[in-house]
Length: 476
Ligand code: ADP
Ligand code: ZN
Ligand code: MG
Image (cartoon, rainbow, N blue to C red):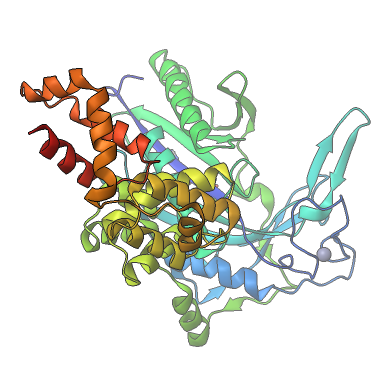
């Protein structure tokens, strides 16, 4: 698309499944992967006379995210019925919030890959129930109602995005935020976070275009690809003077393009009206105070603080603040005396490598903070060298042992006394006449090789600094 002629507007509708013990209006379990139709009851199956009652935990998590997104909370949030027929919807209406959602008028800051900060306005955030799930196979179509009535929070942004890249970065940040708050696990592949993208283009300066809503996007990458595809498709239509239809399109992941699904329905079609079975939800000062006590520092703010407080480069701070657990672990280690640069380097490097290999999370792994600090301390004090420390780390994690025991059992303490190292140095020098002559002629390149040979001959335990000293002393 020619960006000197056209500009793009993108707004998102993001659905996130809230983590709660029970469903939004009944006591059925809210859990994924159980046998079909085992978590159902008269309320979530829409039996006549069954009455819904709002789950406080769902309301709390919804409002917590609203506050984190800097939304104003409506003093009285109202639940409405959105009427339509579909086999996965037992009541023939979905309970949602229409005119008075929990949160309105917020904003979110996201760091873009070029380093700039993008602020996107949040239009509103409302709580609603999810529908059941249709399963189509050779026998026919079936419905699993376990998901019917599970709590969904829908967050709607203003059409503030300009490119697919901005949206991709935003979604990664948004996922971090909801995980930091513990309101959802934000897994797009598994559908616990779903995103519809509204895309329009127009000649520059002409304002918003006719929007197309794209659904069926199961990764932030696909959201980006779908947006880019829509930009091309719509630009071609506009250039040819053809109309852009306001419609809902589906992303086809095999063909990497969007396809028309249906023309866009109007809010009027749904005959929204307040649900007579549910009272409005009124916030109280106690409720808001409790929410405020549950708020945590968000990933971007934490990244920036890590850069200033611990003097970390952006890349490292970004890595450490990806997940709250990791950031907490790092800060706890620093509080207990670890050197921030050192701790960050180990966490980003070998610790992550081994944990990934063993498919472990840092907080539940055998590398507790005490062991981690001790390991760093041993390297710092010269008890073991860096190479040995990597081996020790591996054993701590795979065999759940203490670093000092591992070092003792394997006799891995670093050797740095001249008396035991000198004979090894002499042997290596005697065997490497060419290298020695090169150094004598003023070319220092082979020094590294000689140090390596001594390390090898000492079972990896020698102190490399000391070895270098001895080599130079001997050659002179
Ligand atoms: P509806 O009420 O039909 O769902 P909304 O006004 O709630 O429409 O908007 C839904 C989403 O579409 C929002 O994310 C909004 O930012 C986005 N949107 C609205 N108009 C446009 C447009 N012309 N171009 C791109 N996105 C738009
Ligand atoms: Zn139920
Ligand atoms: Mg809408």
